[in-house]
Amino acid sequence: MTLLLAGDIGGTKTILRLVDGTEIVKGSQTQERLKTLYESRYLSGDYADLVPIVQQFLQEVKEQLGEHLHPEKACFAIAGPVVHQTAKLTNLPWHLDAQYLKEELAISQVTLINDFEAVGYGVTSLPESDILVLQKGQPQTDAPIGVIGAGTGLGQCFVTPLVNRIKVYPCEGGHTDFAPRSELEFQLMKYLLAKHRIDRISVERVVSGPGIIAIYQFLRDRNTAKESPEISEIVKEWEHQIGLAEVTVDPAAAISQAALEKRDHLSEQTMQLFVESYGEEAGNLALKLLPYSGLYIAGGIAPKILPLLETFEFMEAFSNKGRMKPILAKVPVYVVLNPQVGLIGAAVCAAIF
Image 1: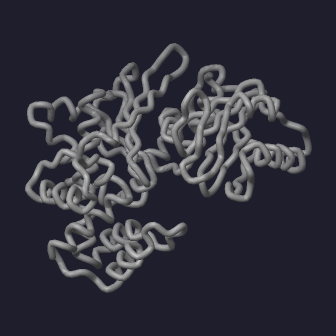
Image 2: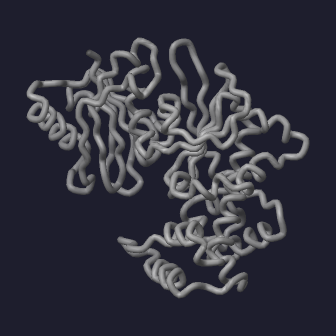
Image 3: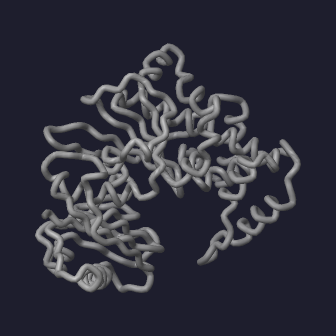
């Protein structure tokens, strides 16, 4: 048995999973081969750092499974940048160091990776039931994989096949320039430039959870459609709470849900522009990578707005690249449905490195 410890480490919660990775070490990369032995989650803010959480987790393993199981390798996916195997969490005063964790936890190998890099490792190990096909394309198993995911920000990475394993390359593609294609999108860009008093707009400011709110505010302020009292109140409360330690409302979720239920025209317009912008950026990434092994739409937003992604607008914006349209028709496009894809990816990373 090859015992692996996978972790999804965030500012709010930490999820740990002990995995039997024997088969994946042998070369199989399917989720069914990653046998979960025990899993638990913890409130990150209740602990001084990661070490006591792992120690408590391993004690729980012993109590629940009736035997002492100690992992040989560990990989922790971090909500923040990882530099030289050290990381400082974006929303938590933790400084993590792989060497320190290795020594304190007596684990022979500890790896820290960015949480979206973990998603890149995870998508290769998902069963068909965890994937929604938007475009079948013409898959090529020896080609790169692209991953894009809108959530709090806009993550992007790409994956290449190597002998008996894969390699994930993180990037900062979400911070490239937003490229308007229509007069409405040009007006959106001008609105955001003036609102934030900055000299450029990144695509992340539009294609993300905060981007949904920004699009709504833009359409609201130009009187595109009448606001509903319900959504108006939520957005105004959120605007009032900006800068506070705790924000208690989620306008992006409310707007997207209202659009899905077709009960607020302004929200529907907001999500149409968001979906088109998302598809456009997904197509941009596909042109740069030619990911004939698949382009995966991950992140927290996609599974919640599946009916909107399945509409004409997303794939039309994806493929609307002039002479390159026939090339993009060959790219398989998938939506990731499993919210724990990053935790799966951490286990895969621990197994193959």
